[in-house]
Image 1 (cartoon, rainbow, N blue to C red):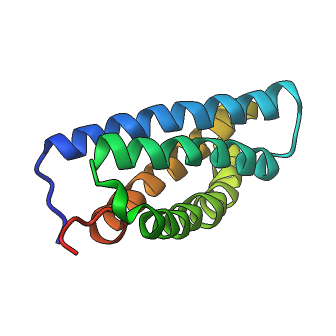
Image 2 (cartoon, rainbow, N blue to C red; image 1 turned 60 degrees about the vertical axis):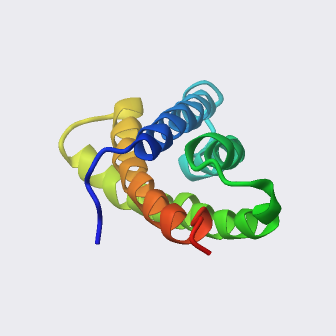
Length: 139
């Protein structure tokens, strides 16, 4: 069951996610807007960069887990996060962008809206799996 109570850990996780998302969006918009790279390729690069930041910030700041399980946590983090950012998120962007374009929203704004919705879904995905599988202190 999902606990909707606001806790310090959820606040820390949210801060890490906001910073990670800012890194992701900044790189994505630079690559698509300034360098004109294809959206899905640019998303792969931007999410990979934010992924690296997110692991260390989540481990040390958001969930505060000790280092003696770092290899196991890293492997689980990689599987959970990459499933979210390389499978779930591109699928949602691919599905959402044409719908957003049908509403007459064009260009960068369409990308931002699709990415934002996909990021919110990934945020939920990550928190659920990080708390239950990756950084679970009750092992």
